[in-house]
Image (cartoon, rainbow, N blue to C red):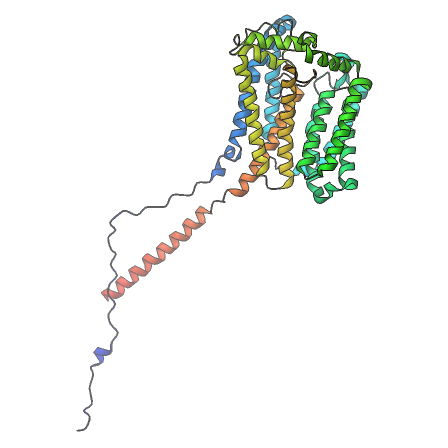
Length: 440
């Protein structure tokens, strides 16, 4: 049987009519994603809050103690109890300005300027020997009517230069010709000029801080040990024979006082009396008596003894705890720095502040011979306060650079929203076109 041809209607070959696209009702309303938060919107979010908190508390303690130790002296000299205190407030304002300025300048710029800064500091140290103002014990330590002490600046400048120089030496630090000898010459020049003022405590601080930074940079321990022994021998010879007469007297009285406290230096005896008067809880803020006549320079070198008398051992221990917290935070910032220069800079500044505080506290507790070291953040003194606060600003800059590199950048919200809006408009246009096609 022949095949029967099959006839198919042409309408059956037409493409199927597309089904209309209907929007499915949403069970929940559309939620617009929240805009990502950018922590850099607030400028202070990039600063290290813990370091700023500890610094602020130390400054507040300094304000209280400076007023407590100067209101009577200020009244006797100027007829007003607040004159010296207002000068301290002025110095603190200048110091805070330096802190903010250095905190927001990228610290790596100082690596390129380290040589010029060191040369300028050496020039200032030479100038103070030639044109400086005579102070106590015929020392020349200040310029501009006593308002600027280059020795304080030399401490910070040495830290900056050592951080830049040691950070660039790398493996050459272990070389005698390229590491140890240049290091000893540079430190010797700065410390020697400071000793000529004479300012033994500042020179010792410079040598110790530079030596610790040399160790942190990877110096050979044998070389460092030999250098330390030689420096100790030179220091003993200087203090016992060739140094200034007052230094020899302080060393001999310290040795005598180690066996019998009544034979100690007058300054140390009065400081010990202040601690004995204060006991555990102190006699009360502003109620101390040693600061009036007996305790020398109670608002500068002896301010920790006044803290011990008025706030007691508990208050003195709280101040020590604040310095400990600052050291811990500073070393944390150094460990997380983005480069070797930042690490050495933050560590050097931290150790510098710690050594200054430790030296002052050790003198007031008769652990070392008397020196002229001030208590950082607390003692009265414009040069010391400004330079220390500048150091804190550099530490904040190191922490800020690290934080800016770890915080992710916020996407361009305006551009992403515009792109999403265009995609949504194209989707709605396609849906309308399909719906019109279905109706036709």
